Each structure stands twice: as structure tokens, then as C-alpha cells.
Length: 544
Image 1 (tube, rainbow, N blue to C red):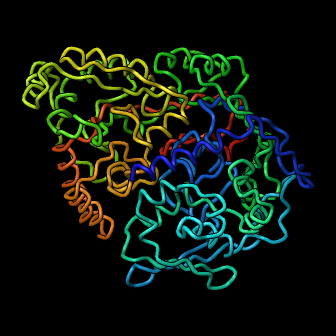
Image 2: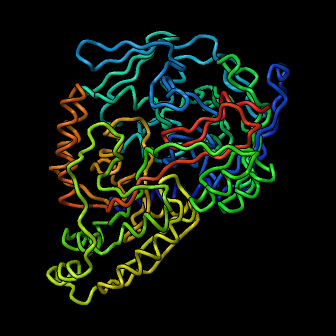
Image 3: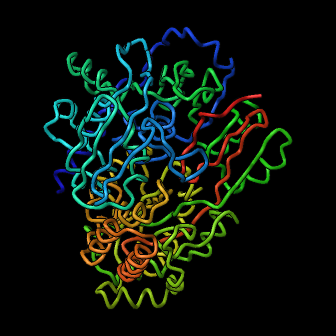
């Protein structure tokens, strides 16, 4: 298992090792006049690790690839967790709940670029290619470009989907091993973005399969034109987009600006018109600017501290309890979130159905924590690494400050924490490989289903993916599997409530806080929506 993680870590560096600047050229746009000649600049927080959505799991990646370049069979409505038809116009479910038949949309075109000119429209072959690549280790394209698909495997879809068949050019049938209650919600997620089978064949023949991660082709609203790592991403509006009127800007530019304070200044100077993740300390300044809007809503997110249970002494529940009890979470919420967050007790937010209101966090008690450590065999504490994210995320506006506060709290019980950080892509890659002892991380819900929290973050199948704690506990995992195969929200809620109680007893990570989400924009921007699932979207957005 360790070897698999190391292989995966090596593979994920492939994109980072590529040329820093990728220029993709601009395709000739015969219908460009149909798109308003407007430019929107987005001050984003970091560079994407790549442009192949199935490989990645972070909002930084998804904003840059999934919701610009690609579409899925079904999608979430803008600003909502409600699923709507997309590349599939409709779908049928068999009486036994194990067969899903998708009826595909006609007339959808893949993007024309300087490096690919499609000879056919989107059809069933593209859907089959997209999913066979993730399902079959011997699929030719996957063998030529052997990467991991963390979301797909974290949710057990590699075992759940037994067959993907082309019924006819515009019908695809998925056969499942067992009933899976969140299947349609899961199909709207980023990993399920549909790739061009024709483009993949071209890359395979040219011996350039890895270009799919640097030179993407999709059916989405924007065409990637160039990417300069840590600087800019440039997109053109897609003149052939299948949703009439959805593309309302001809140029979309990501100005990659890791410092939140600098993002604020750029927004105030109109160097960008939308910015990501403001610091709580900047909200008052933003609200006072007459040229800006600062809408907000309760975040569908969780910031937490994970314990790598494969590293001693974190394999002991008593040690994890002691570390948790030693953290002054109230002080963290006050100092880090500054009124824009609430203390967390569960592995999911209060707005998620099945949330167990009865769970309570252990009280802050350094003396009791020290006693627990002594009983666990560590009267003098121990040394440990504490990883802190280099970027602001929806669930954690200042990981550096949070890590320093936790470090100070732990020192009071004899635990010496060395704070470690890396560039964001490297941070995630090394965490997947299990290099950390403890780390600050978090999650914004992806599909509105409890399984997206409990299964994706804590299930045994997610150990090589988003289960950063590397925690596999059979009583908990059995409940997760049961929840997936049970129909009905009430019945599933009972299962997930029990799972949350098991989590609280074992504490593979410490929930810290749920943050309020702010989306600062220029007043020139029209209909930019806060996405509850943690990314930014620019289809449907226009400029005055």
C-alpha cells in the first residue's frame, strides 16, 4: 500500500515537472461575435496541479478545469446542490436500482483548438472512454498515461460500476454491483467530466497521452488558451457552447495571487473583478468600498486537523484525544475566523442532512490532556510534525496562524510540534503519500450527500485519497457501505448518525470550524453566485 502511494506521488509530479508556461494558441472563432466582447479577471489563490479533473480533488483545480473546460452527464445548478441534466438530457433507473441508462444530448461539439479539431460531435464513445479509463487498469490510454483517480476510488466507484456500455450512439448504460443511493449526485461531481475519445486517440497515436493534463479539450463554456504557472491562466469564451447564451464574456483570465491581502488590493484597483477567499480581517474594508459587493452565506465546509494513524503514537486513541483536548478551539475560532465561523463538533457541517446534533466536543482541558498522555505512556510528551496549508481555503482562512496556536497549545502538554508547509500542490501530493504526522486540511461538500463527508474523508477505500488520517476502522466502514446501499433519507440518516458517533469515539481527526463564505466582486460583475460546493463558476456570469 505504501508503495502504491509513493508511485502515485511520483505520477502526480508529472504535471509540475512540465514546462512552466503552456501556450495553447487561440483557435479561430467564426462565431466570436455572438459572445459579448468583455473580459473578466479572477484573482485566484493558487496554481492548479493540472487540467485533467479525474486526477484531482481540490477546489483550486476544479475552478480552473472542471467548470471552465468541461461538462458532465449531469451537473449541479449554479449556486445549488440540485442536479440538472447536462450532456445527458435524461436518464432511467431500473426497478432493482442497479442499472442507469443515460440518453445523451445531440449536437454538442468538442472545443476546436490549435492542437485539436474534432471531426465528430460528442457521443456515447466519449462517455465510455471517460469511464473505462478510470475502471480498467489495462485500458490503452491509462497504460500510456498511468495516473490515479482519487475521487473515483475514494467513493468505491471502481468496485461499484461493473459495466459501462454503448447502447447506441446517444445512449449509455451503467450497470452497478449493488444499489447506490447517491449515484446520480456522484455523477455530477468533477471527476466525471467527459473527455473526448477522439482527442485521446490522437494523443495516444502521437505518443503524447500526458498532454491531456496540459492541453485539455472539453465541451465546456471556456477554451484554455495559455497557462503560466503561478502567474496567469487565459481562456476564451467557447463560441460553440451547447447552452445558448450561457457564455457572456469573451475573455476569462485567472490572475494567480496567493496572498489574500494582495488579492484585496487588486480587486479595489479593478485589476481583477472577482477574488477568492478573503481573510476575515479584510471583510470590513471590502464592505466599505462603494465599488464592491461582498455577499456571504453559511459555508458547507469543515476545517479540521487530521492525525496520521499509521504514525506512532497517533495510532493510539488516547493520544489523539489528548491532542484534541489540548487545543483551545474557541480561541482559534475567534482569532483565525474572526466572527466568520463557528466551532465544529462533527465530521460534516450542521446544514448536511443526517448531522448528529447530540455530538459534543471534549472541553479544552490541558491538565486532563497531560494526564491522558501519561496514561498512554508519554508523560514527557513527544515530538511531531504539524503541517500548515500555504493557501487560504473556504474552510480555513489562515492555516499559518492556526498552526502556531495549536503548536503553542500542545507545548503546554509537552508535545513539541514542528510546523511544516509546502506549495499547495506539493502539500497535497506529500499528504497523499502519508509523509505528515498531523496536518491542517478541510473539505467543502461536493454533492450534498452525507457519504461525501463520511465515505470520502474517512472510508477505507479513501486511504490513498482524501482519507488523510489513513484510518480504516471496520465498524465505521461497514456503516458507510450500508448507507450507500440503503434507500430513503430517514433510513440513511439513522445509519450516518451511528457512524458519526463511532467517529467521535475514535477521533481520527479533530473538527475545528465551519467558516462563512464571502464572494467579493466588483459591481461591474453580474450574476456571480456563491457555490455551496466550494468552487467558482463563470458560465452565466456577465460584465456591465
